[in-house]
Length: 149
Ligand SMILES: *[C@@H]1O[C@H](CO)[C@@H](O)[C@H](O)[C@H]1NC(C)=O
Image (cartoon, rainbow, N blue to C red; front, top):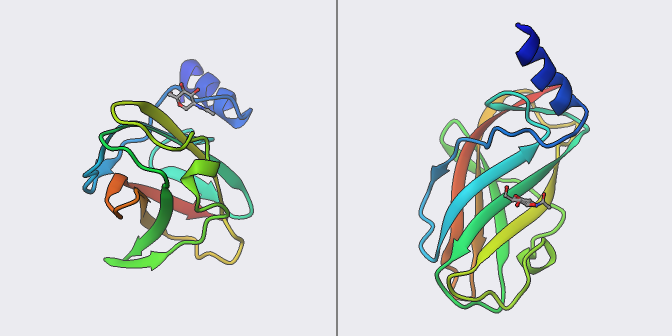
């Protein structure tokens, strides 16, 4: 590791925002468009999620619809099988989004992702969806993570 990489890692370990956005796949954002996905701390990709720690997730998206509600759902895809992943707050309107959601507005969905100690230490794909009043996805993103002890 050269000095610069070391500096970036140190910077990220200190809990400061890391410049590198998370590489994600759009899995069908039908009523919005995702711009940036940030997970903090995530020094290198795929993000390493340490058991017993909590991570902040910040999804910046543009809404294409008006919606009074927004509901988040998270799945961990393990061996192709989506398994529901509990998150503390499902209500997007309580996660940094000011509702009602307006058309053509940029929103930051900000929440925390606690990684429980009983989770297995594996690589998996996280699928994160935020649905509108009509159960259409304001965003649907997938990104790989690695759970480590
Ligand atoms: C979320 O990310 C956006 C875009 O990078 C940034 O402008 C915003 O301040 C972030 N919000 C929080 C609470 O970190």
